[in-house]
Image (cartoon, rainbow, N blue to C red; front, side, top):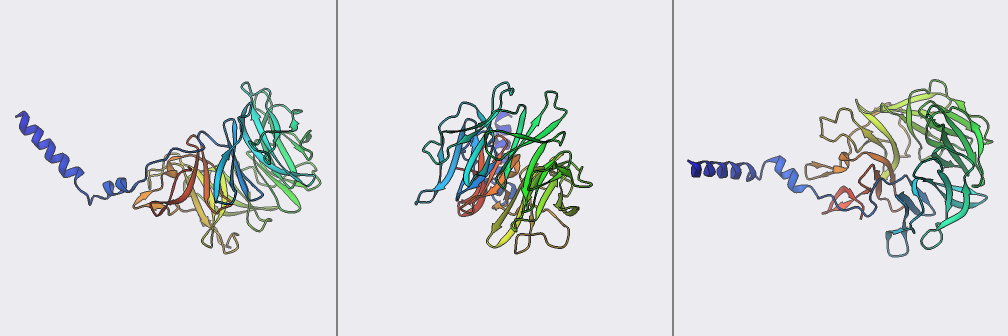
Length: 361
């Protein structure tokens, strides 16, 4: 009886796992294993400067540059504290990179310049320590904006710096800052509380009417003047003195990550997503969705919905969908990169002669 049972189990195993035409097993066989990332952990945002790209993770800054033989990564010396965020800003005609360093107790967080032109990218001389409770930094048009939070988390204030060494208060109780843009005449700030406009002369922030929708991210489109922002519920708006709805996630939520990319002449707006509950169409609850733009990288006249990206390995959806995407960008070489929440930097490259997402090497 025991031999008969073993025989039947072997027959069942052979029948099930030998069904080479079963699409489930075909998808599994076509999936490329997740690679070990060169940049691990939970990387900060990407910035691009002088044809190079930078991203921080842990106590290091990483540089993606071409020294003549193609783009590759290099790594800084270890810094005294972990980097939470980086920003590039032109101060008095000189490009600077600043990092928000977080200390163990978070009571002594500070902003310091990084000398990205020296081997090993050591710390620079400029440092901003005259603000407390720093939670975010963003830069645009030669101005570094600093968002702070009070001890009980009930109020977020706004400062700015144009010299990289001291800060100036500009707004109280503006909400938690999560994006910034400049359209040539005004700054636009995205917070969970409102969208704000600030004149180039850096006067007091003014809320955009009806913008208390819980925005989580902002971006400038390719013309340098059109501003887009997305809410946590996945509604996309064009930002001006009024709000124009341009698209939405169909029943999904947005992480706030936004990027405009050009793929073989097709312009797309990519937006990180987070689903509650997970998506039933793919089984993936994260990753990103995409919205096609016109030939100039701007919105078309009609309101559109985001769609699933079309990157597949055989029939297997890209595994970027298993990762929360905090930041996304198209690098100086044209490759698209994503900063994931815990699994390092990923990239969209050809692997096995197929365009696919995987950990960046």
